[in-house]
Length: 544
Ligand code: C2E
Ligand code: MG
Ligand code: MG
Image (cartoon, rainbow, N blue to C red; front, side, top):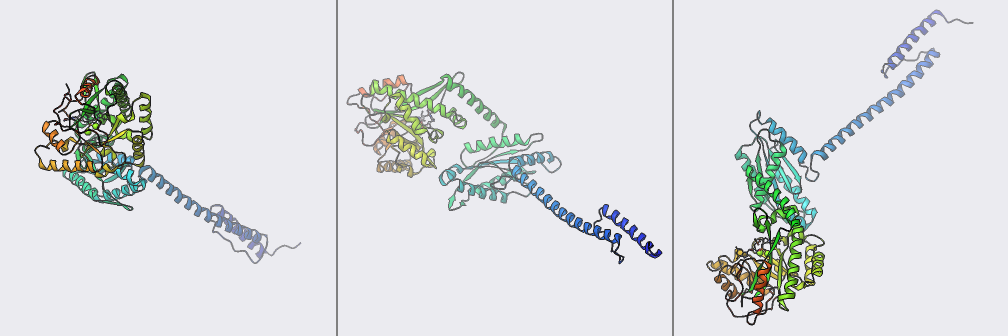
């Protein structure tokens, strides 16, 4: 048995100590700790080499793990940022969304005391955006919104917030604003949006209506935004491109509209709607050639209401759909009744106003034809009135619906022609039969030479396109005489009668038919009736 020399055993002890030290270092996480093997090449060295290899492997694994943890941390942070973008920013324009705007507005109100004055919030809605969207498609609409967002961003300071609330509605929060600053920003926004926008291949014009609410302590962002929105609707109602500051009276108006909507809903179901008929008269001879059906609301407290007191509420709330359905059914049933009792074979036009919502409904044409079929009325006795504003940005579906109705014999009139964004283009549309010249274009006919020239030009065009003209709002014999001299064939107005009940109109129709040589003329197609009698001079009834 050989025993190692004393120096050799000392050396082994020292290395054993070092080995223990290495194990402790590695176990405590110092994976870089190493121990050189000795020339002895004994079991201690074998363990040392084994430990070193293990430590190296562990080190590589740990480094790899650390890299992966760093990568995952970055991904989590990215996802967090993306979530935040989704939750707080508008995807299309990159502007703040309603949530972020509300939070910032609340903060700005809270800080107002300490930091130089309360904020103001502006809510703006693009005028004419729907026309762009309907005419050129959503792609162009999107490009337009992006450009509008850029222009808005360019106007405000870094501390202000621009947001898109949805659709074509935007908002701006101006931090600690003075009245002058707010007006200046609103004006600059209007100027910036008045410039045409190049959206893809299309050049578009939009404007904007702006409602402004100056913040007050203790008012929530939600309230301020609602008030600014109310003011914006008032601005829009006063015509394009308006700016309005919120006033508390506006809130009362908004509340009143809500109440009117509630009452109207019940009124339609309760049979409070009534119909009046206003004669449309042939200028030469004065015979009644048709009537316009005009709806009234017999309100239990407020009395008889005219459409201007409820139609816009009905349109905003969708109630105009059941309202128009009632009007159509009532008017068609009345036309059928007159046809079988007083009209005989005479031409006749029952004019019915159609709301934009109704016109754009996909089932519109079939619905009208179905109602006609059910009532047994003659399609040729029905004339639908649509306004030129309704036809703006008219889509292929609307045109198809009107063409289908016209093919079935139903007439189409452009109502209030000349009151809005008139386009002679509408006169050329396949589905148009009648142009109703707006009251505003004939009001000064006897005194204003320019109005005379305009009326003459329009009537010339109506004739050139083979259409029929009806002048609206004729109140004096002089107006009627001038219109007649200019070649206008039909008139409607207080001169011949206000809108009256069906019963009264039945009598007027009977008298008109029974008048000497009288055939009721239909104002819907060109080429009917002529006479040299002066307008307004015949028995065409005057309403009560
Ligand atoms: P509109 O279609 O242009 O109808 C003519 C309006 O002018 C009627 O007002 C009529 O009473 C009024 N008017 C007629 N002759 C004269 C005149 O000589 N002088 C003056 N100053 N006014 C005259 P109304 O009945 O208040 O209707 C206002 C508007 O409400 C209508 O304008 C039409 O756009 C809408 N409307 C009426 N009935 C209906 C309906 O059943 N459905 C829908 N959707 N809208 C309707
Ligand atoms: Mg009308
Ligand atoms: Mg009209």
